[in-house]
Image (cartoon, rainbow, N blue to C red; front, side):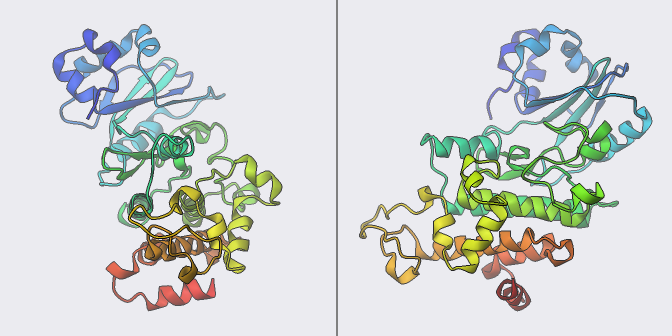
Length: 350
């Protein structure tokens, strides 16, 4: 798939290179002395990871991310138990945790390597004109995100809350299949530390509004974050984009205003609305499907509008009004699933 740690290939065995080439490392700084890896991938051995004992190894390898240093202590046995739970989880839309290594001043997490990087990285390249991301790919990413979150919510016992779902925590493989990363770490690691946050679980722009009042995460909180990611996929804009400084309340009221006023096309990423490559006229500015013959796929425009409505449902102010991940999976793919009438009614009511 590609070498993630090629710069250190000379210092480890050929077997390890093959494994590490498919893994990424996240470092969580923390003052706690302990050694010895906890391995969840059968092809890894402690000897293969011995090179991590060298401080120079962190100066040479590209890291996926680093958490900040927190204060205080935490229960080692609790953390190890949580990590053992996370390390056993296997799903096609979740990034696999290969190993957990406690160091005197850091927590090292060895993850399955994703050659395309994060969704945030990919969307940044799209904005820079370095690549294209068609709607079919975005819809596949959205569906993978929902499936992964649904698995955590309904198929894990006990259920697992992601607590920090965002574009930088959605990792993409070569085929642009979505894999959720950092799931459950806000609970497993101290002070809610996740990929780039400390002290508070979640990330600005993606945190459900009720969290600021209750400081508690729920399934509905994850659904809210999922709705924000869906909005980013449609619009191409992060919730912290400068664009939203001119719109009070940010991305959520902006999307809902466009939906309620029938102006969804104004919120869709312009790169998705380019004229069709196989003939056709120039795309019009009217928000009526019948008057936009130049767009690449009119059926996809209908799907984009539908996805924006789903994003608005997921980000409703009242957590009880938000759909479940099961509901959202049906709404995103109505043609592939049966008994979609209740979901259609929910969309109309939303």
